[in-house]
Every structure is written in C-alpha cells, then in structure tokens.
Length: 253
Image (cartoon, rainbow, N blue to C red):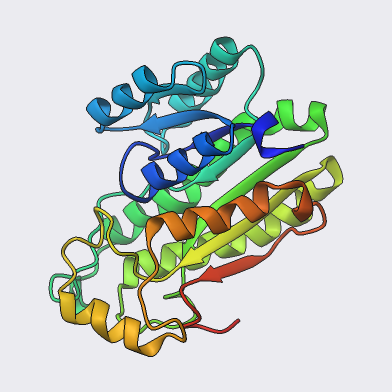
C-alpha cells in the first residue's frame, strides 16, 4: 500500500517531532489522525488547513478506553480504518542533563510514568487497531525510540529504560503480528534540533554531538520524519522487528 493510500495515526502529532511527522505525511498525500493531549490550538490549525487530510482528536494514549474511542472516531471521519500507527507521544520529559533525576532520586512513579507513556501507550494503540489491520491483512506500526539505548552518554534513566522496553516490545510484537501482514519497527533518533523536549539542551551539547557525527551536524525533526517514510512505503514489505537509528551516524548498529 502506498503512503498516499494510508490512514496514519500520529500520537502527539501536533507539536515538536510529531508535527514534523504529520507535515511529512501530509506532503506524501496520506490522511493523518493527529492525536494530541494539550496542544489543541496547533491541532485545530492543522485540521482547518487540511480538512480532507487531517482529523484531530484529543486523547490520553495511556488510557485504553480513550484510545479505542479515538480509533472509532477516526474511522467514522474518514470512512475507513486506521492502517498505520506512529507511536511518538512523549510524556512530560525534557533533555536537560542537569535537571535529570539521578539514581538516588529515581522513584517508582517516575519510572512507571515513562514506561506507561512509551510501552503502555504503544500497547493501547496496537490493540485498538488490531482487528481492522487483521481484516485488511495490512498494518504498519512504528515506535519512536532513542539512540541512548545503545549509547547512554547522558543517563536519563527513566526515559532510556522505557525506550529500551519499547524496543523489546517492538520485536516481540513483530513476531506475533507478522502473520497478519502487520509490520512493527522502531525508528530511533539522537538529540534532534530542535523539539519541545530538546529546547532545554544547551548549545554546547548540540555542538559536541555535531562534531562527533560523520555528517558533522545534528539531525532535524524533518530529516528524522523523512526516514520514517521508509517503514511506511511498499519497499519495506519484508522489514519488521528492526530498529533503524537516524542520528547522522553517531551510533552504529
């Protein structure tokens, strides 16, 4: 299925990286379900600008019931079910090395919050879309990860542990769902310049990362979003359970 024929849910799709993903999908001709939690103004602006391509819906993706209602609402709006899911939403996090919780400060609540925002949210959207994807014998699920799992240069314990768990879930889900024509993959970025989560990062950190990459620059949200289209395109038919790192070559493998 071509990208232009897909209906793609982007969680957290109205701001930051999610907005860049949404805009890339729009340019590819896809219909996009823009999920948001608090970014109502940005979401409504997208819906007004692209009424035939964009459907916006407020939902807490860690709430299973709200996610199910969102899928049903999107199906009614477009007349067809969601075919593809991009689990991008980020729960209350900033890349600020000075403010990060140290080992001594970590709590069950902190760890659980990030796990719920990464893994539980992905489980909720996957389960909500599963019946229609099985019927269609087609589905594309892309989870947004981080290269900090492979290279934890800054120990964001809660965030990185949650994304590592999401990577494991990506691979186990791909094993379970491949028989139905559903591909599950992860796209992992480094520090992107600039998103809402990275706006607290000092400039010298961006400069250090840029100097360490073969490309000698930091990757933008738009570049990351473009790479995501690989997993949505027909050329990825035989690719599942994979983690593609898009960080300018900083981390290998």
